[in-house]
Structures are given as structure tokens and as C-alpha cells.
Amino acid sequence: MKSGSNLEKVLTAGHFAFTGELGPPRGAHAEEVRKKAVFLKGRVDSVNITDNQTAMVRMASWAASLILIQEGLEPNYQMVCRDRNRLAMQADILGACALGIRNMLCLSGDHCQFGDHPTAKGVFDIDSMQLISTVKKMRDEGKFLSGADLDGKPQIFIGAASNPFADPFEWRVHRLAKKISAGVDFVQTQCIYNMAKFREFIRQANDMGLTEKAYILAGVTPMKSLGMAKYMKGKVPGMDVPDEIISRLQGVARDKQAEEGIKIALEQIAEFKEMKGVHGVHLMAIEWEHRVPEIAERAGMLPRPKV
Amino acid sequence: MIVAKRKPFDEIMQLVKGHKKVLVVGCGTCVAVCLAGGEKEVAVLATELDMGRKLANNPVELGSITLERQCDREYLAQLDGMVKDYDALISMACGVGIQFLAERFPDKPVFPAVDTCGLAVNQDVGWYEERCRSCGRCVLGLTGGICPVTMCAKGLYNGPCGGTNKGSCEINADQPCAWFNIYERLKAQGRLDCLLKVQPPQEWKDTTPRTLIQPGYTKPEKAKT
Ligand code: SF4
Ligand code: SF4
Picture 1 (spheres, each protein chain N blue to C red):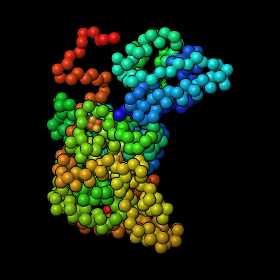
Picture 2 (picture 1 turned 180 degrees about the vertical axis):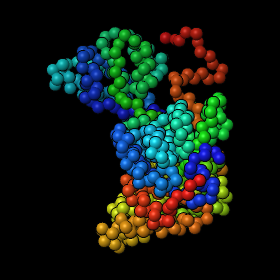
Picture 3 (picture 1 turned 90 degrees about the vertical axis):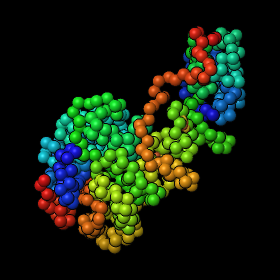
Picture 4 (picture 1 turned 135 degrees about the vertical axis):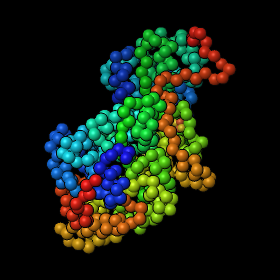
């Protein structure tokens, strides 16, 4: 075991993993985190805690992660390279580990221009690839990035994101390979809507032996409405929403669109369960945490394995 | 070259409002080429200031001069006899020139009339695009001659990020994604292997003031004046 996290145990035992996501509040109320956590408890193996998502200031992801631990859930602590330099990152990794955080997701982070402080200076002292190797070096060699020894190796299950859809498509699998060689243990993908493209991506990853070196969790975000689907298609960089999804949602009455979105997600999950090289699903039900119990139930994900 | 943009007139007015005799100093090199602080721009600013101050019932006595280069002592020396007649200086050079001027005349307030914006190429008259942040450790050899520090909005060394969008950067559809372009260029050259290795964290060289002494030269004990 690299970290002994629940997520790591579930995956190494060969179970199909199911992870969720929780965005910390834009304020100091721990209650907000607890309220959302109720819906996720017992329904997912680990919960991603976003880090100033879309460059909007929120409660620190390590703090919300700790609240989650108090509530008996396992966090997957997200860290972006946008907001801190290598000193702050390593300090946070040590602190997070000392307080019981065992999973981390290493990300570049959205550009500040998207958020509520668009003129802030993005740090990007190191990038996500370099952050992955930093955590690995700390955990496996017991050394800081500088090469100096650290006392008490941080036991972290190292995660990264992967976008299988962005251009150039033929490069995506190599980028995944690069993250794996940098040291990731598990990968959560961008929300998948284009299944044909994803099948091809996983086929390439299987051929290159990548899916044996790291666990791949397929990203799923159910569409809440036609409006959301259109927005994701047109406005969110790096997102690939095929026309079929739009027309399926268009084909049902307005008040049935959310149900149709969930149906699409359930069909995807059913396929991922059978897909070689996919080891789990990462469900990003953004501001829709209260629907997670139902989705988990209908997807046949309950009860979650006890390992 | 170094490019700069003239500051808004109101800001310049505000900077010098307490001074009665002001010398406007232009620079004939980079900022002249990029139409921000050469002889012509000096003349325009002097005229604007003259009118503006008259309208504000606060007339000012103005002088103007454009040096060949403000980042060179040899040319700054031209001002030695002149500066005593003024109580403040406005510089239209880049940030380097402005500081060298201020350093030469430490008892005079020196005000910038331009905002220095970077190291840029001349795309067309009046149109300049940044290309280098003078990081001090050039990686262009690995990136197909496209600078990831400057041209990638996140300055990534192992791009592209997940936001790359059909050849555009996530920040803006009109901004090309540097890493998309790096990929395409290296692919065309058959050099994609350059991208397979993880680039280690940058050893930043631009975190302290830098001094450059070329091989064969030494730093004199005492700076010349
Ligand atoms: S890598 Fe970019 S910023 Fe650094 S010296 Fe080369 S061109 Fe300039
Ligand atoms: S989209 Fe491309 S240029 Fe923009 S931040 Fe990402 S990698 Fe850099």
C-alpha cells in the first residue's frame, strides 16, 4: 500500500471504484460542507474536494477535506498549481498528510481570468506534471523537491486529471503516459460525453499498457438540462459534447430533461463497468449532491465495498 | 525589441501636477520604433501638457529632448548641463531607460510617461506581440521555437493543460494555445520525442536583479559616471 487510503484499497482489491465531488463554500460555514457530505456518505469511496474551482475563492480544499474526515468520509484533496509556489505546496502536502488526508489530485488549475479575481497573478511555479513528481519524490524517496531529506514520508495516493478529448487527440494518450511516468497512481478523466472518442482513447491506453500502470476513473457529469448541455458544448474549454446528447435532451419535455440526463449517465456507467481498462467512475454532480444517492442506487453502485 | 504603451494623459498630469518646470525626455530606440516614446511622441505629449496645464490654470514651463538611447551612459551625458534648469523629468523610455535617467540625476523627481509591456515582435506598424519574458534559461530548442513561458497563459513546461480548445487557449478563442502550436511544429519536424520526457521544475533566474558580464570582461571596481 502506498497510502492505505480507502480509494487505494478499493482499487487494489479489484473493485469498480466510485468517487464523488464536493465544492467548498464561498464562506466560512463548515455546515455547508457537512450538508453536502450527508448525501455522499456511504455512497462513494472518496470525495474530490475542489481547490478554488474555476479560479473563484472558496474555503481551502485542505480545510474542507478535514471537515469531511470529521464526518467520516474520505477526501481526495485537490491542489492546483495556480495559487501556490513549491514551498507552500510541499508544506500543505505535509500538513494534509499529518492530519489524515491520503489522496491527492494534482492539477494545473483554471486561469485566473475565469474567476472572481481576474487580475491576480497566477503562480505556476511548477506545473501539474512537476507537482506529481514532487509528491512522488516526497512519498517514495522521503525527499523534498530540493533533494533534502524529510522526516516522515507523506503517504499519499497520487491522482491526476486527464482530458481525453482536447486537440490534438493523438497526443492525449501520450500525455497520460507522461503523467504515469511522472508518478500518478490514479487518473480521473474530464467529463465524458463523446463515448466513441473515449473508447478509442482507452483502446490506445490499453495498447500502450497504461491501464495496467495506473487506475483510470471515467468522469461522468449528468446533464441537468438542455441549457447546461448547450453551455458545456459551446462555452467550456476542452469539453466535447456531441450533438446526440443535445438532441436526446431536446427530445423530451423540459421537466423530463434532468431525468433524461441521469439516464444518459446511467447508460455510460453501465458501459464503463464492462470496459477494459476502466477501473471506476468519478461522478461530478456539480451542485447536485442531493441526487447522488439516487444515481448511485440506480447505477448499481451500492453498497460500496468495505475493504 | 522592448515595447511600451503611453500612459493615459490624466495619469501623467497627476504625476507632474506639482512641478512648474518639466523636461520631457524621449528615447530614439525601441520605444521610438513602437511609437510610444520617440521624438514624435515627445512632441505630442509636450503639446498636450502645455494645453492641459493652461486649461487647469497651472501653466508649466516645458522642455523636450529625445536621446539616441536612455539605457546608455554615453547618451545620457548629453543632459548633464540641462537638467539643473528643471524641477522634474518625464521619461518616455522603457523602464530600464527611466531608471538609468533617475540614477544619473538622483536629486530630480523622474516620472514615467509610458508603461513598459515586454519584449515583442513587430507584426505590422503599430502592432506588436510579446514573445519573451527573459527567463534566463531558454527552452526554445525543445519547444519548436515557441516560448512556453510567454505564449502559454500558465507558463507550463509540460503542456498543454486540459483547457486547450481546438487550437485556442482556454482564456480566449483568439489566443492560440502555445502547446498546440508546439505540438504541431514538432510533429511537422518529426521531433515529438522532445515532448515525451517530463521537464523538471524550472530553476528560476529572474527572482533577483540580474547582472550580465560577458566572457572576457570584468566588472570595474567602481562604476563609471
Ligand atoms: S524560454 Fe521564453 S522567456 Fe525564456 S529566454 Fe527563451 S523565449 Fe525568453
Ligand atoms: S490552453 Fe494552451 S496556452 Fe492556454 S494555458 Fe493551457 S496549455 Fe497554455
